[in-house]
Image (cartoon, rainbow, N blue to C red; front, side, top):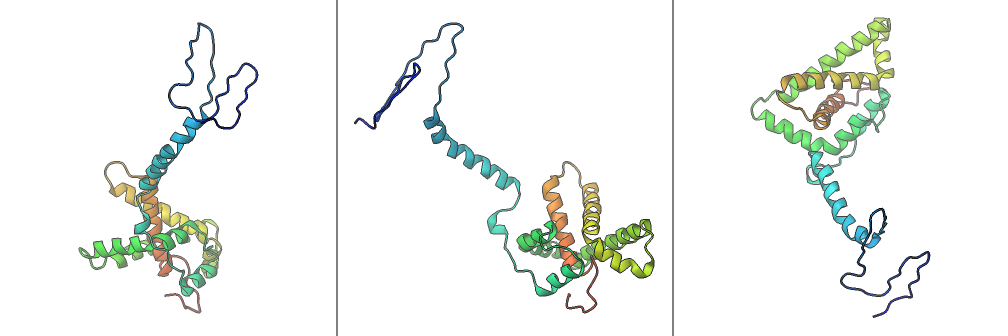
Amino acid sequence: MIGPKASAGDGSTAVGGNNNGTITNLTVGDGSTVALHLEAELARKLPSHLGAFIAQLAFKGGLTASSTQMRPLPPEVADKLRHNQLPVRHPIIRDWIRHSLALERAYHGVEQQNADARYLVRQRAGAVYEEELLKAAQDSKIPEAEISEFARHHAIMLVQAVTDRLLVDYRASKTGLVEEEIARLAVSLVVADAVVECEVLEKPSHATAP
């Protein structure tokens, strides 16, 4: 079967229609250069390589779509975030929305061995928050009566400081290599949970937050 007419110029050779087998044999002498543009071959192989690469990145993330469950942000949590001027788009909040089911499963598993696990983790996050807040306020010479207001205006910095401190603690407790990306996600989820439960950041005075 002959396909659309093919044409070539500048010494090139055109091949049209349907073809099977070897089309061109090349013999190249010393010092000669041949450039072949095999776009059809590239188009055929690219999807499989793309699929393999995407799968590698997805599995490296340590979470699959089936382990995540998007959840709406409860009104009392949104209220607390507004009070502390922490954007809903902040990474720890987005992670909490996306991976809260994985967090609940993890808590449930640890609670089989220690029923107070959730309370102790939140208390630790809260203690680190207070330490970081007082240190930052002292460095900025903020009067005690204005510390809460200072915290509200520096929520992003304080959340980052708490996350960094807890991540350092976690690394110190592990032997061997720690997967940085996954470890930071795990710590961020714990900090976000502490934010939601009012152990980290300031609680609104009208207190619809838990």
